[in-house]
Image 1 (cartoon, rainbow over the protein chains, first blue to last red):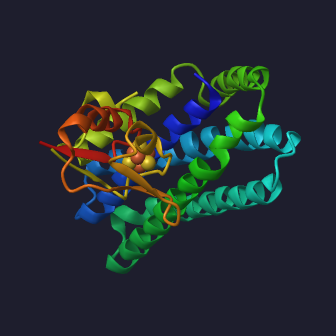
Image 2 (image 1 turned 90 degrees about the vertical axis):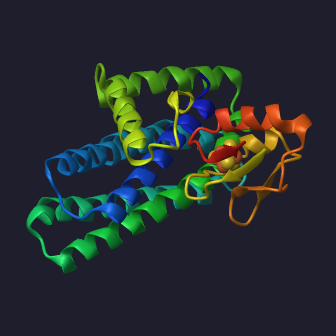
Length: 193
Length: 64
Ligand code: SF4
């Protein structure tokens, strides 16, 4: 698949998991073992799939390639996107800190956690819309077919390094399981790729 | 047929707008798509179903 299509599909998965994260907190009454497992899977998805894998791919491969293509205004766009990535990373660090104490925490700490999760969800949603609108079209407009093919190969190599063998499938299964669990009437098999 | 968009899921890639511009508009300010009809005209129903199927986050909800 071409790099634009790959990133678009990844954005779709991230949007699904952001909706799950939001629903998780909206319905959270008590953190029993099952919910703790779901929360663990969500945190792992955002920390590894989103931050290290998806954002890593953009920062190491997509942004430098577009910067080399000297696209108009690309540098200011890239710096605003990297700033979003940095803020999302910081937001995830704060959430991780809360996760450790969540099972035993009081109402005030729990509401602080929900607020931090909402801020994180908002930030990533706006960021993905900005990328879909401004960044992804440039991949096809500004990079040659050879450059895009080369990038697709580099995506594959990075997947092996960051996620390891079978890692991607594990995350896809998580997206599938949690989307169906938290939005039972919404999805059917056509929405899982 | 009715169609609506879940705005919490819409990621603004404009795919639906490309597949069926008669039904899906794009809001340049919010960077999200909008439905421009109350009821989907019969001759566009297949295109709308296709747009829903292709919508990566599953933001398009088709109601019979
Ligand atoms: S295809 Fe789906 S995600 Fe993309 S703009 Fe349309 S409704 Fe939004």
